[in-house]
Amino acid sequence: MTRRRMPVRRAIARTYWRLSRWTHVRESPEVHGSRIVIGAPHTSNWDFVLMLAIAWDLGISPRFLGKHQLFRGPAGWIMRRLGGIPVDRRDPSRIVDEVVALIEHGEEIVLVVTPEGTRGTGTHWRSGFHRIAVATGLPVTLGYPDVTTMTAGLGPTFSLTGDVSKDMDRIRAFYADKAGVRPELRTEPRLRSEDAVPA
Image 1 (spheres, rainbow, N blue to C red):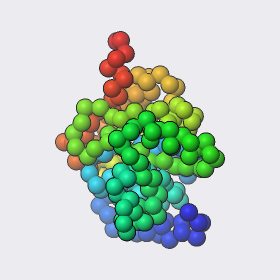
Image 2 (spheres, rainbow, N blue to C red):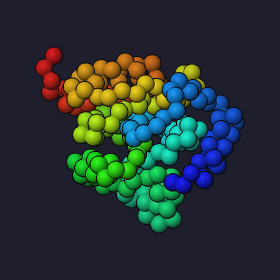
Image 3 (cartoon, rainbow, N blue to C red):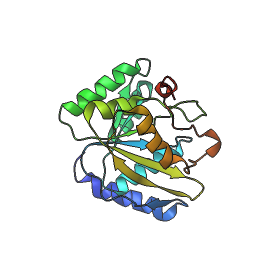
Image 4 (cartoon, rainbow, N blue to C red):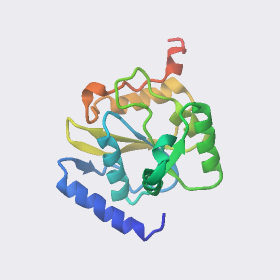
């Protein structure tokens, strides 16, 4: 991403926020340095538009993971220009390894992850974001859309401890009052590995 594109993208984002019914709540200072941004609740295709508008408004060039099928043909060019990283979701462990390798290679990256993994109702979040954060030491920023207040933005940033239940308790507390674009499709922030941890 060249610096020349950022003023244009920021202008597009700020025009969007002026015309949209949604409000960008700028709770956090400017985001600098590599990090993982959680985009949740993930209940609609509009989540992508909102997170992109948040990032561009803050001068961020986000990267995101997308199914490799989406990167075929002309659409693939657009996805890559927007920051997409094609992944084969049939092999989740490889996704984590590829992202870790990308970060360890020295690239500064703001990686937006939607751990719900689907826009429909699920039972658990995918754990890739947690494994990537622990493996790389990258801080995690909590991003959100909330239809009950028609607001979207970035919340707190913190480093994960590696204690899954402790980390997820902190994440659950933040998202407890965030409904997403379609509240009926919201998935409670919980990883499958937590179910195996004795109470």
